[in-house]
Image 1 (cartoon, rainbow, N blue to C red):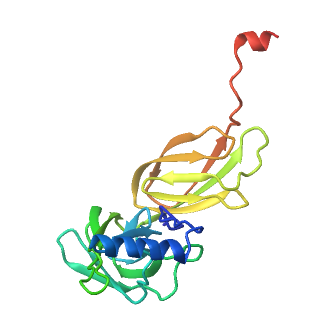
Image 2: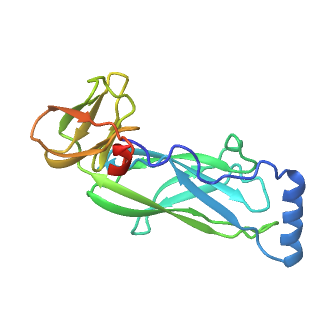
Length: 233
């Protein structure tokens, strides 16, 4: 399954070094306030197969730049039950100044449909104190795919294969290889398939996947619109 996000969305200012963190720490202390903690989640699959293993990344960053390495995060389902815990790495995420991260591995829900989970940071009352935080995690669970759809995408005019074309058979998706092909596993039944490629017009087709099938899609070049007056010139 493709992931909704491959990089952490929590970008820290690389120009803010230890001096800014120390200033923030002093400001919190002067105000007598606990430190705030930012949470983030990434690499969550766009669709999760029911009851199969699920992995994604979580991150936490203190607003004052505190070391959060070794701290524990909990993952809770929509009933409030804890389904996984993860310990933040001692090293920060590459390219950030204080984003500590961990990989979560757990089991996906058994029921198909939308599920609302949450990553929670308990915080603590020690010195310096830190606020508790929660971050939502949206999961879309599907039944195990039963059929494979092989999609071959070509340019209609040249008949050359199109690499990097996006194929979406909701909620499943994939990207064509150098040969213009992609294999997408789907559940049996009728699906709408959206195919798009850079510089080409997208196409939406209906497919009936009752068994493994091969589909050929031809995309037209997306030429800029020209008015009749411009054509006459």
